[in-house]
Length: 300
Image (cartoon, rainbow, N blue to C red; front, side, top):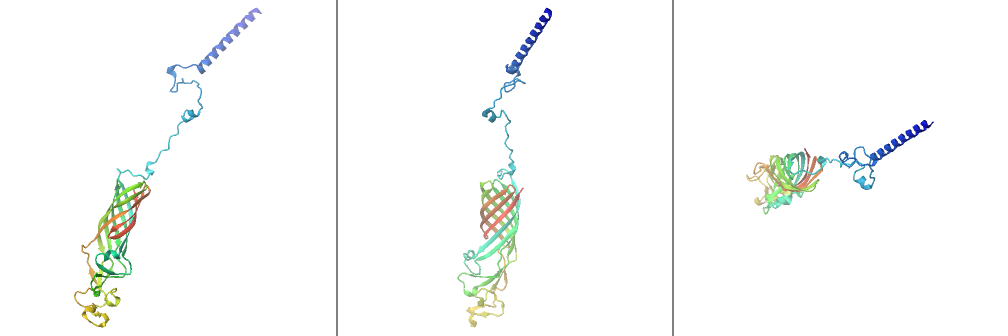
């Protein structure tokens, strides 16, 4: 019996000693500082436990979650243009070319016309544009009408009343032009434009003049060159409006002095860019008469 008591006491001591050693080992694992060479970038040894900072500062500094990266921007979706980059576009143009009557009368000409606009022409055609650093160089091949309906009478200012000539105008032209247009941006999508256009045209149709008859007060052509008409039927030479002399004109065709249609125009307007691949121009100016119009191009 005494031997049994001694064995139980010895076994109890071994168990107590083992438990104390295990407790000390656990405490070292949880709280003891690991060797410096075993610590990670946060100052903790691999596999060690440390107190987690749950403060707002920790959350904002990204200790509890990874920082969210900003979205990647698609630079091609912007409307801004690189001034050092070349851009090309193909498009279509429309031009209205009005020529007011007073513009011709400024050159010492009297005009009989029922409209204040001597010409109200329309023009349309394709174009190609090279653009760099705010300068557009646009080549275009387009058609424009420069005629009028019916008859328009002309005479030199101060000339006698029997000097009226009636002109029929069916002039049209195919134009080859180059525009040099500069732009000053206000925003990425809008800019002020200004420049000049130069070109030549191949005339189609023409102008035809005939002596005016008295009965129309100079507004209609004489219809029969062999039958002179006299003012009031008196038959005096000074009163004859339609005659048979060699210097009278009957359906005589005007020849353009240069044989071509010269084209010079000065333009100002605005450029709009609603999309990175689309440019719209609205402008007006002065050249062969006045003009106004719009152009649209696809940028590639």
